[in-house]
Image (cartoon, rainbow, N blue to C red):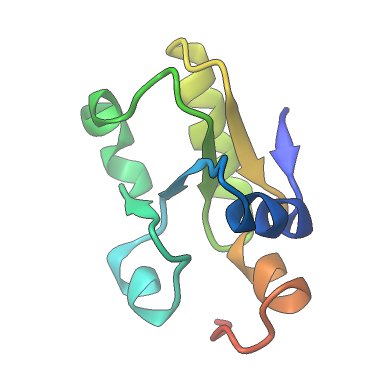
Length: 105
């Protein structure tokens, strides 16, 4: 499985070649915290809404701890998306290692 660490994602987001961010958490989770410019498609809607995504884009999928996003990344790869990465450890790992001001839950 292709994964990206929070530190590597932070570096990528600071540059010009930014990946597309896909947040697959529930609505209530996105109200607590989220990454800027992320598109929110809850995991239970991904099968119905995958056509909203561009298979040519580099996509980084994230959730709370990386489990749901890993499943979505696998699903997208099976649908022909070639450049999909899972955020290792999810947003919780991001908050612990990159942005300690981010709300954790």
